[in-house]
Image 1 (cartoon, rainbow over the protein chains, first blue to last red):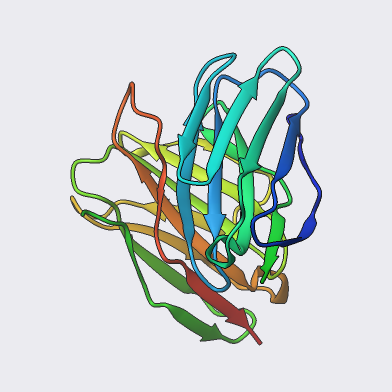
Image 2: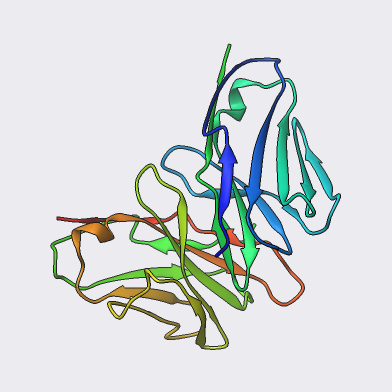
Length: 109
Length: 114
């Protein structure tokens, strides 16, 4: 059974600071997804990582994948308030996505 | 930009009643999914659907649940006899086809069972 664990689950950070969210998954998966969810809203796709060593960047967010360690990271550079949201990683297995618990990011001025 | 749409946005029903949640996936997409999210918890897979049949379903997707693609555009999730624990946000998602990876999620239907 594939399990996906994120940490931390809650992150309060100041603007302009850097931080990393970690996503571990328990068995082999061929792709890893990152989504953003604002309160009461749907899931917005951020990144899809397909191979070992994959790195993708969009603005202040950068995601990477290490399939050997079964680890993906979402790095936030110089956080701004607009990045406050819950971030989910999800590993692909069969025809489904298995989601982590989510990391709620709160960026304070 | 094409998007997945869902109706209704909020459905309140009494325990034991049947509900149908509707989704219109992105046009020309071939793979369809239902997920649910109980308030404050993670997103959970329910079922995937391709070529007019279920590809995979989770343990949550028991005999009370069914899916259908009644025409070329709609994709529905039916819960035959709702329970209190079915209260959740239900998300529909779609994916274009083989060789594509993005799953696009709809805005969700909040189901409240009283």
